[in-house]
Length: 449
Image (cartoon, rainbow, N blue to C red):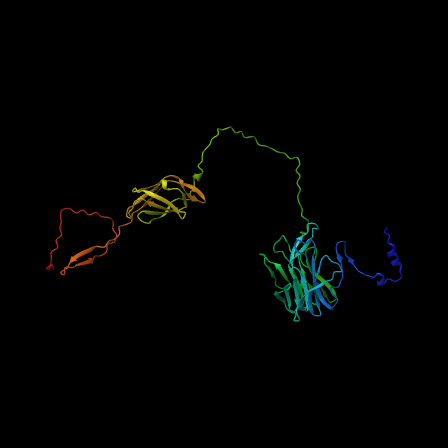
């Protein structure tokens, strides 16, 4: 048993308890619902008369308990927002945060994600940083905006009499199963609501207006709530009676803790197949030149061939191949009619520029041969394949046309050149002239001194 000090016992025995003797009476009433939840009744403010109001609790990602509460109140027709930090007690009052403006009815609620608490196995609403504000004006138009950002303000309904909001359940396993952030309202005694919920594809949109026909007409008050078995509820007062309806469960069974299978095998047996005997072999070695490590075979559908040829001039020949090429090719090349090959340069991946030491007439056909070449390769799907024997034939260009000119001596003694018709390209011809011939020019007039 605890023994009180004599000083305290003497104060308790006094007939009158007054402040002058440091005995100021205090009274706090706490109604306890259970060992976990505690209900407190307290004033948010006492300086003006309040009409309606609503409260929203914030718990951010990483927080194990709620950290802040917001309250919205209609004070003499003006909506004000108050805040209070957690943990707190009755000695820490609510503080004014900001003023929304004139309003007829108000509601406040956080949006967020439902996350299961690994310790308690209960779902917690992990909220966004700021809540949504709902309010109606004097004309009965219902608006919503995100906290103090007036640019987000949009109208949701007309001729609204009363409103109530609630963040309903959402499955964090089944995409698209989301009851959303719900705002309910009365119009002509009927119950309606709109939902801000995730759609298929991930977009979050305000859905169309729906009516709760089960509550009928003649309703005068409305409140939204959610249950612990994943339902959303609407409760109204109608003709002095309280009535409510509940939605279907969002995802039944998800409140059950995770289950795991623990397998413990008994009388396990192990069988082995007959051993395969391998006889020893002699050690063999192969030397590999790392500079020429190529794939020696290639897919049958891939063919290495020339796709184009250009005579750059009489000493430079440009070949284009169907695949990229690389390595050193000059030492494996030869040309007929015989010419000295000075260089073979690879450019643009699949082009080979061959430079000759002597002129090769444009009309001369030739054959260029590339023998089996381990220093050169072509590329298929990133693999190097050694060049095999390849012969390239190029036809000579046709003869070019020439102009034929004729000399005529006229009487004045001057020469006049007359251009004949142009000849078109023809194949080469050889004319052989036998015998003797002479050309005599006979003067037609006196030759001037």
